[in-house]
Structures are given as structure tokens and as C-alpha cells.
Image (tube, rainbow, N blue to C red; front, side):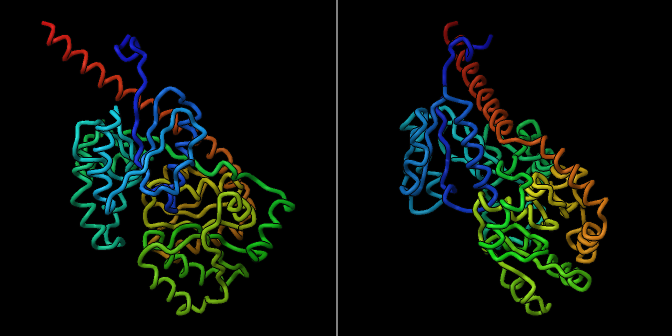
Length: 391
């Protein structure tokens, strides 16, 4: 019986949430993880730290949550000055950041989520100043953190290799997917089709437009597909960085009238897109997890995705894996799905089985177990110090 359990103490956990009003996969992860954490854990006290007062009240229904706005001139000072100051003021036992950094100052133990090693594996696709920042700071964050969460085992191995981190410090905890994703009837999907003016037959691309998502090679593959099939390409997402060349490529390839951009689509509508699409094409150069692949599988939509990065671990045998650097290979994967009814059925069945391995409840439970293990370590160390002092 550990001192932690004997005392039955709860922790004060500060959660860094300056990314909560952004878009993208990390926000999806954060929102779903917090929901499940608060559902299964009514004991620990959570201090949600915001940089935007408009977020106040979002979690006011939870008795063990205190929402606090911290002011700082920029993100760096928010992370490295405002958060440590709050940790001292409120007496945090642990600081948790679901996105990529921890305070380097102060003695409070910290955990952060490093969603993948893309900044190192495919560094040239990122902005030059982001590359410099990550190269300088990420090794420091990794050394300072008491633990690092990766979202796959492949991610753990790559983080350890690129950042020279002890693998024992990195804890793989799988993400999950939008729980609204499921097979839907025509009566459910048709209102969404009309609302977004979706074509009758289409391939679906989901992701913020940046070189990392490989939209350029998706377009090249789609041009090959368009020569053989009467399918449109529906693009769900928003503009991220270095997207201008890809947008120019649309005209260069003569695809202007073949592509439907919807912009960002809310969680409640996106399941209908997967149900209506004939396939999801998701050939990112690197994904730390790849939530859209699971969302598509949960809806029965066949998936063509990348064999690089961490996606193969998530997709298992339930998707066609392609070389993201080869438009011909991406096209071939899409073509197979559209031509082979037996293959489509097999991928659909495997997809339904694959998604059973993932849940936000499991993600939250394993994350909470990590928090508790760090709390136990802290109290055991304090007990040893007190015991030594007594002698």
C-alpha cells in the first residue's frame, strides 16, 4: 500500500488550454479527452487555464473544475511565465498540456502530449521559423517533463529516436474518433447532401490544407482517377500553411470544376460526408495518429491512406496503404476500391472491427492512470525525504 493510497489525496492538476479555440486534430483530441476525464474523475481538482476570456463557462457544470484566464503578450510568455506563476499561486501538483510544450521554470511536475514526430520526419514542409523553434525547444520540453504522451507506439519510437529521449519516459496512449460516426440511412444523409450541395458520386479528402496533408499529390492522383471515373473530389478542411501552390495546381491540372470545397464542417455533419463518399483519400506525408481514417471506417467508408508515419499502426489491415510520394500509387489505391466490390466489402467489415480498438473513455482512463502514477511517485519521494529527515 503506497503512501498515496493511504492518504487518499487528490491532486490539483493545471491544464494548459490556450489551443482550445483553434481548429484541427489536436483540438479534437483535447475536447474529447477532457470530456471523458471529467466523466470518470470527480476526485482530482482541475484548473483549466485559458488565454481567452470567451472560453470561461465552457466547463462550469463540473464541480471539480476551476476556469482561469491567464494574460500574456504572446504564447511563449503564456507558457513559460504565466503558467508557472499560476502553478505557484494555486499549488498545482501536476501541469498537463495536450499540445506540445511544458513550462521550463518552476518545480511542478508536468506531462505533455507530443502527437507525432512530423516536425523532424518531414521537417521541410513546415515554416522555417517553426522548424527553428521546435529544434530549439522540444529537446528542452522533453527533458523537463516528468512524462510524455505519444498517441501511437510508432510515435513513441520516433520521438525517442529523433529527440534522444528515454523510451520509458514516453507513454503511448491511443486517441479515438468522433463518436457520432456510424452508418447512416439515406433519410439522415440527404439533408446534409442538400445543405452542402454534395455531388452524387465523390471521393472525400479531409484535412487542413498544408504540405503535410499532401493535397498536391492527392490532386495529381485525382486527375488520373477523373480520366476513368465520373467522381468529384470533395475537400473538407481549412487553409493552414504553404497552401497556395496546391490551390494553383487545381487550375494547372484543369480540375477547377471537379472539386468541391466545403470549408470546415462541424462534428455533427461530418459523419454524413463519410457515409455519402465512395472512399476517403487520406495520403498525408505523416500523421501522428490519423483520426479521419477511423471516422471513415466507423461509417463504413473505405480508406486509402499513407504507409508512412503512424497511420499504418492505426489503420491496421482495414485500409489500402499507399506511397504518399507517388500519385500513381494513390490513384491505384482509389481505383481498386471503385472497381472491386469484394474489396470494398472486406474493407468495410475490417473497418468496423478496427474501430472497436479505440475509445475516448480508454484514452482518458490511461491518461488518468498516468497522472495518478506520477502523483504516487511524488508522494513516495516526499515520504523518503521525511523519513530521512527523521533519522
